[in-house]
Length: 315
Image 1: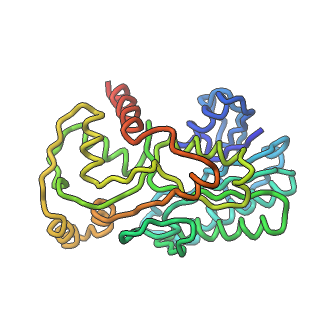
Image 2: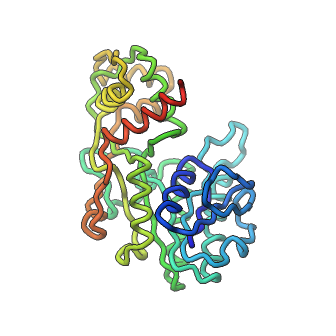
Image 3: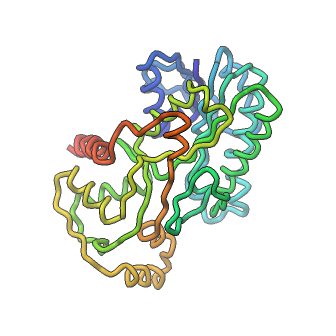
């Protein structure tokens, strides 16, 4: 049996459904009973922090997939944003892991972020040997959780697996990808037709397949992996392929990248400029060689399925 935290989130719902279809018994940890997670046994845990008693949720559980995290932008009046991230992403994670050890859980899989490695690459993709350089309160908290989990693994028989993922896209994806697909569907003119960066992404289908692989593969024990679709795109290429999947025309104006970046800086949007113009590449050689894993779904197929879901919802 597997316990999935954050089960009513974007990725959690997909994982619960996938694992149930594959024959796993699934416990779905949520803030409230959610009958929409078909096939899973719901477990109410409330807001995740360092004080939750997980005994009932962990009863009979062989593996834990910990997806729950504080990921949203902290309100502007927060006096200590890092402390708020740490309460959930560090305290909540390590509390669950320690109780999982006591409950006899075999494997604990933690979904981390490529932000632990940094916010940009300069020609050389990140891999598992890259020096961590977390760049935000969120990624700092994820890195601290990773370190705490590795200490727990060193003192117990429970196997820890850490997965660092770049931007995840798929049906009902929230955040930046939701904005991107909405803008693209309306064929708005965008000054993004001459960007030559390289960025890694991962579809829900590939990420879920990798998670399930890690839960079963003997070689995955106590390892950290980077995961992606295995094909890097520029922002311009992504928009063109997404438009093709949506069957809409693209109106991408070929504004020189340096001019675009300067414009973003003038209006105080340097972070957005980095996301649109900067590179962030992931090398998945370790996953390919150690686990004999290859992304089962191509970028174009992932975008097609995502676009079809978006269009059905809009219709």
